[in-house]
Image (cartoon, rainbow, N blue to C red):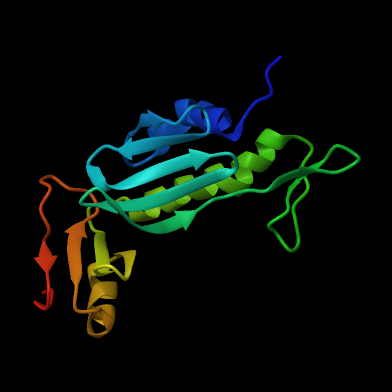
Length: 176
């Protein structure tokens, strides 16, 4: 019997829980079983990358990686007694079966994050210094007003969920 992988476990969880997400995830690239990429329908700037113990939400702009918005990674370990835990945690939670740990540590927090951030009232702010650094954030309009003065000179503001793929703001024009 083939040992289950994190990639397969996520795909199985997604097939059961995908309708609870605010947008549909569509597998688009499978890199020889080592990493799978999902596109989020209506959200062209975000990708979900799933690998061996990694679940990450990445921002892609003009076909270039910009930043990770969030990761839900796990370093799965098993004790001598057969309990599972995540080695990343200072005070790990021990569980009798690995799928319960994956669900509570990675998959459910991913679902919660998606529900809070993949929404029509959220804005994706991409800051860039060409050839140097880039960063991305998902903000409400109110959060954007607060952060406005701290944005660097090169930035793009886009709705997270796009009806049309064009920025709503570029450069130094303040939002309303």
